[in-house]
Image (cartoon, rainbow, N blue to C red):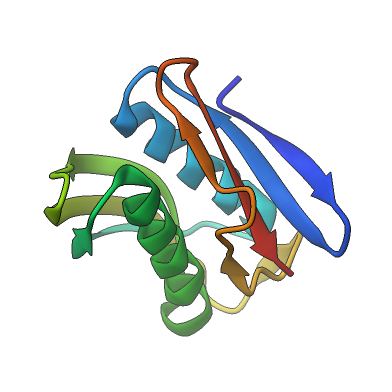
Length: 135
């Protein structure tokens, strides 16, 4: 299991699993895409590189998930997996995400506003992370 959905009063959350930062981020993306919904028909795959200034993996995760929500709403791209991750603590990290151009035909599960820092947790030693989204 890569992730599980957590019900939260007025919001929704994810608990995601992995043994490495790459695995955790990939699981978080899969879970976030599942929360948002799915295309009603075929979609065209695309990739995008992000250069993010992060001081910790928590910050990087927050920034990536913010980009996922923004890209879905603005560009109609639902990013659901990580192609490459070059995480540099206290520096600029490069992330290449892969996703689906959704178009107008889409089946929503939740309308996500943004990830929050409330209960944001990464525990690499135990192989899980938690994030709550405003809906």
